[in-house]
Image: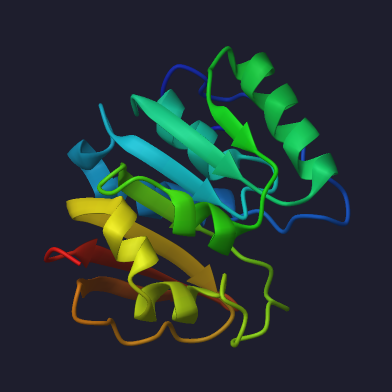
Length: 184
C-alpha cells in the first residue's frame, strides 16, 4: 500500500496487522480522481482509519487538515508513524466513531471517508447505514461536502440530507460517494 499522488507520492505505508483492511490503491485512486478539486484546502475526516491511508492521501493531495479516528490503539500508533514518515500532520483520535461524530462541531468537515470493518453489524451506531440515517454525520459535514464509504454490500439509499453521486463495485467491495445537500 502506497500514497498515490501529491507530496508523499510513492511512500509505502504500514498497516496494523490483523486490525485493518485498507482500501486498495486503485480504489483510492478512483475516489480521489472523482473528488478532484474538492480535495485541496479541504478539512477531511478519516473514520475507521486503520493505517490512515485515505486521510494521508488527502493530506498529500493538499487537504488543509485531517482528523483520523480509530478506536484501536495499534491502528492509532501506525497512523502516527505513517504521518511522521510522510512528513504530514493530522489529529489522531483513539475513539469510537459514533461518539466522535456525535461530538463534532457543526459543519466541521468538507470530506469524510469511512472504511469500516466488513464485520461491523448493521445496527451498530457507527455503521454507515446508521450514520447516514442519523443527524450527527450530516450536522458535522459542511453543505456541499462529501461522504465516501466502502462497504461489503450495495450502499444504502441516502437520507434527505444526502445525494448519492456515485455507487460502484470494485471486486467484493462497494464504494459510494454522497454529497451533503441541505442543513440538518
